[in-house]
Image (spheres, rainbow, N blue to C red):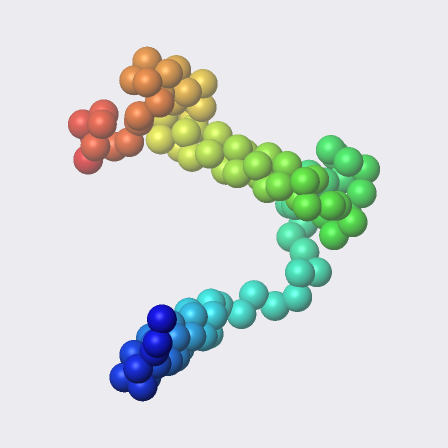
Length: 108
């Protein structure tokens, strides 16, 4: 099929616009610094689980360390929300099908 100059210009314009959006999206991402930045909690969890520092862990192990750290943070949050008794928070969450927020419990 034959292409007209207007159609070619329209296609070039769309591609240019798409590339500009992609480029600006990339530039909006925050600079995170080197991947070697360490957190003592992550290092301790990695040492306990894998016998090595967080920096020595492969990506699967790092994910596991992050999950453990997140679980610990959630447990602390549940304890804070339930007078120091994390198990009460988990019990309440279980009885409500996993949906427990201040709005759900009427404590908002």
